[in-house]
Amino acid sequence: MEPIEIRVALLQIMPEGTLEGNLKKGLEYCRQAKKLGADIALFPEMYSCGYQIPEDVGVLKAMAIGKDSTFIAEYRKLAKELDMAIGITFLERFEPLPRNAVCLIDRFGDEVYTYAKVHTCDFGDEIRLTKGEEFPVAELNTDKGNVMVGSMICYDREFPESARILMLKGAEILLVPNACPMEINRISQLRGRAYENMIGIATVNYPCMQPDCNGHSTAFDGIAYRPQDAGSRDTLIIEADESEGIFMADFPLSEMREYRKREVHGNAYRRPDKYGMLLSEDIQEPFIRRDRRK
Image 1 (cartoon, helix red, strand yellow):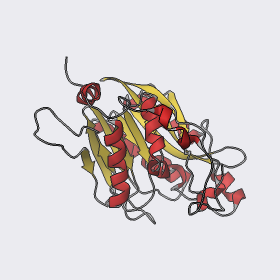
Image 2 (cartoon, rainbow, N blue to C red):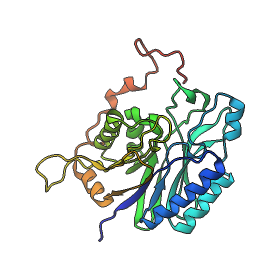
Image 3 (spheres, helix red, strand yellow):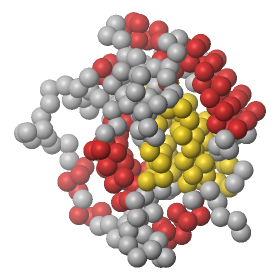
Image 4 (spheres, rainbow, N blue to C red):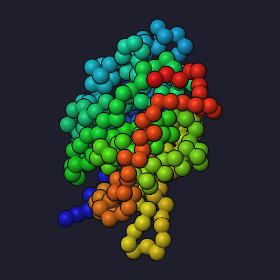
């Protein structure tokens, strides 16, 4: 049997300033990704509006779009045309406030899941967004076989629980839209999440021309040890530069699955009965923040 390799196109691209412009450009970049052999094309965080969160809530709500919008419908149509999955990100219409969401569309044009960011940045503009409530995991059909996928969005990365729950639900690859400076510590978080969960992680950021962003989209395969190698290896598949473009990440899924069967991380030796404190909502100094929302 031929080894399965899943190719993810990291669309590290600039928004165009309008919903129509973002749609036109995004569709074109998806077409380019398909020509490069992508099984999945993934956008940076909240691409429909270029990660804009205005202070005026009325303006914010007017910018939000639904899953039934023309914007999403066009990506569904293109996914089916190209026979390629698309992870399109958008400011989702929701009550009482919009959500920061990613909709994964399969190669047949059907919604696989829509994930809304659970860990919103309540210390900043995202205080004006509704939090997501769960981490869905679903089976994605590709022409190379099925793969279990889930998502985090940006700040979710900074909580080990996000990737852990996705791993426990069966995810093999995490699709992670992003919009912030990706420096050594944030990239190290992703490397850690991939290592400790034996999971693939594909993260897509905006290029350096976008305010408060710097490119450096990354992908990790989670394979730290290979039988043929004397020591450990870096799980990094690719790290993009700061420029605008498409960066391809090839996940060796067959090898990742074999690795998960033999290695000691993930869920092999956990002791959940000892982790009760993780469910406590009690917060003490120095971590009390007045702007925290439940």
